[in-house]
View 1 (cartoon, rainbow, N blue to C red):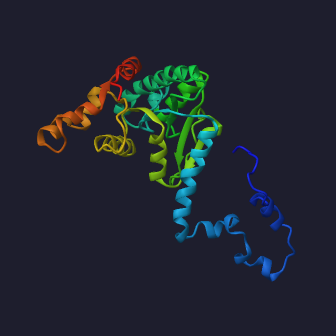
View 2: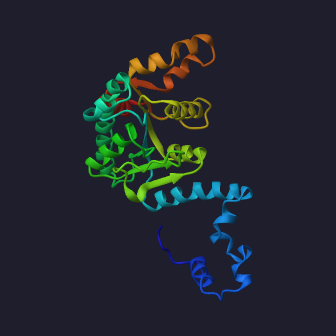
View 3: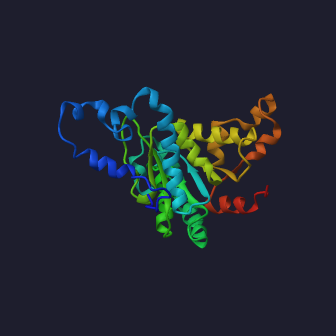
Length: 272
């Protein structure tokens, strides 16, 4: 975080944390209630402090990205289990091995968008992924290979995974709350690209589509990679025919196959 001059004359909190470590050891100072509230992990993780933790998890990435001058992002959602083509023999199923081609498409797409980002001094079109393996790794990898920065929004899972090695270290975030993480995916989004994936990818896809459909988020380029995949997974036309969505809702997204098609679609997207 950036060290900025303070606008007030009061002693700062970090000084008091260090000073509090030097107090005499007495029954009173050993008591948990004597700890500074903001430096007391047991207190900060109490049930009643959830609103404070939610606010902190919203603020930390927001402040860091603001400090780095990031104004807009390209969101890349997709399956963690999709392997790189040279590792497709390790895939759990033949179908996953086939999907490895989208690793390469994600990697190439991220590289091109990062080149555009560099043209804006890294302020716009910054690639953001979930920071994990699979398609997420491909996105961060393409950005690194293009010489730019990229963001990883990891989340603590029961089987912990480290961020993939291509996330810019200063932009590798970790979350406890799924809801706050998803907010950060969309707060700066200039385009959303969704590759084949599982429950997590579906969750991210439909939340973002719902926000646009209901007018809670402005329309932006929204691209689904893989026509065969998406038309088999979701019968989009049936939803419209049944009336549970409007026919015009089918225009909220486009299906593409390649990085080049995706970039052309972004460039051709109607301006709002």
